[in-house]
Length: 466
Image 1 (cartoon, rainbow, N blue to C red):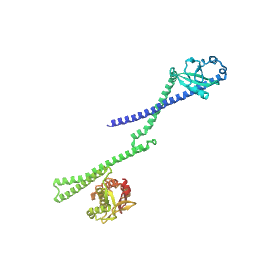
Image 2 (cartoon, one colour):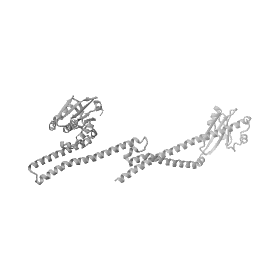
Image 3 (spheres, one colour):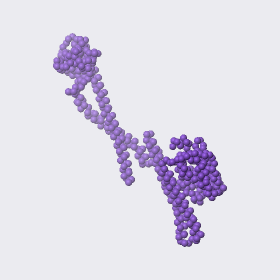
């Protein structure tokens, strides 16, 4: 089972690593393609500007000679300046777009050039330029036109070659660049992925030292949350183990007593008087077991509660008086007076749970008191919050033990607890009930003087929010 779980974890880790690498490499390749496209645009513009500039210079040389103004024939001018040897094409156009001469084609067969961009620019502003790709031969032609004093347009053109040939020439270099960049991206991608996953792997291998893991800001909240949950799970597991051990111990003691007394009765060695005493002890231990099991089941019920409880308005002072009356016989048995004082306080709470909360607090205050002692149940309001406090003149609680008295099966005086028949779960139940009512528990105790435990309820405003 552990092997299968480890296999799934490794597959999930590899899957995440592959996804990160693929996306990183995909972004890098997209960046390469965009860079090549942008570079091509920039390169084309650079070539265009360079060729147009060269054509402009050639035009200036041609016009400065004054040959065209003196009526020299275009054929002679073409031969004179070696247009063919310099891969230049000379064209002379009238203002209406009619071609008078073209060094590479029969002017009579050429269409009207008035719609050509460079011709229209030359007519309107004196000069113009353009670059066009031939759909038939795939070459790019650059044109520069200039308007002469007689109104005719002189145009010089050149070609830079075939696009496919240029692409074939650049392809090996582009492929090498592509492979190099891809390898660099692959190397960087794996490095970055390992760096991203390193804290997660470290956390998975050692959850106890999660706070010591060197990580980065974005993943820190996740690690802190996982660490907190891990500590909570460990604490819960430890509490379950302790609870199981305590339950076993608490049940073992009365069971041993019951078994021992039953064996003595079974052997027939006990007298009638002893049988009566043994039966009383068996009954007493049975009641103790029944109370323990009842408290355990009740705690389990409170633990499984989702926090939603039915609440009704309840007068805390009336609740205190009912509890006093219920515990009157116990108080007389321990020679303790129970006094209720304060003003009526209406609080929205669960009646059954609050009965048990006040009962457990008062029962503890009576059982851990001294003969002739007193127990006060105070009700009132402070800072807009209703409270119920149980004060006694009992044995008190040491300061170092005050934070632990609400733990399950924790007893301040174990010998007295066994004498009084307590289960050690009463205050744990009080803590759970208070938490379900979003109430605060305050404790003030001095050894040999007494203890005050106060349940402070949320204000009406806070209660509406909850």
